[in-house]
Length: 260
Image 1 (cartoon, rainbow, N blue to C red):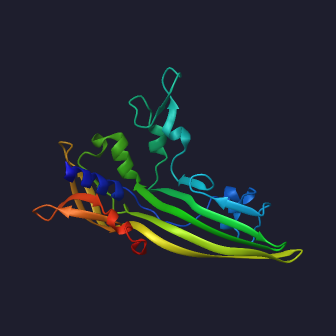
Image 2: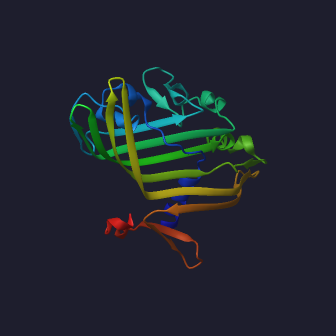
Image 3: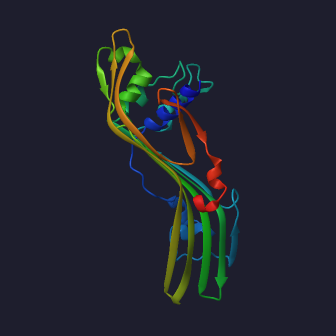
């Protein structure tokens, strides 16, 4: 059972590929919020003091993709009295499958403010400090892999599916920012924000080759050359044949904050 849990984790990590980039929600830029300095350090909020606490003042999550929308994965059932989703036996996946690309990207970004402080000093100067926990992940799925998943093996019997584009890159880090905003003249204001990034975990995949052949009896032959690079407080345990058998979380890394 331990081995199955490990393989499930690896499979979850492998079924992805994309480029990562850092991006804050642009919606916040047009709102009068103390956290606006995350986008533009020159912005000064209307209030002279703010204190941010975890889970209350600053939580954000972004999701984006390039191959489906709401109507592709949700629809009404045949009687029209309830909503069903992709994967339901009565769901018509035609729109979803028809919208698949050669490479289908998914991007996830999440941020939680652990602490925030902003103070107005005099009429012209505003100083701010913030600590944010961030996770950024990018996933990409080849179209044939999703077609194989949702259309079934029959359509691929006797053929080979090339999944060489599968990969993943996930980063979890802590961002500490310190900066200020100052009015130079009535029409000129400057702002500076410096950031210190402390990595917590990172996962990436090197995919040199991954091909899946569907045999006549609908069994699968997988030819793969993959390497998962993990930098995280985890331990991977091997069996007598030196194969991955289990994975455990090593919380001793957090006994000393200097190790984080």
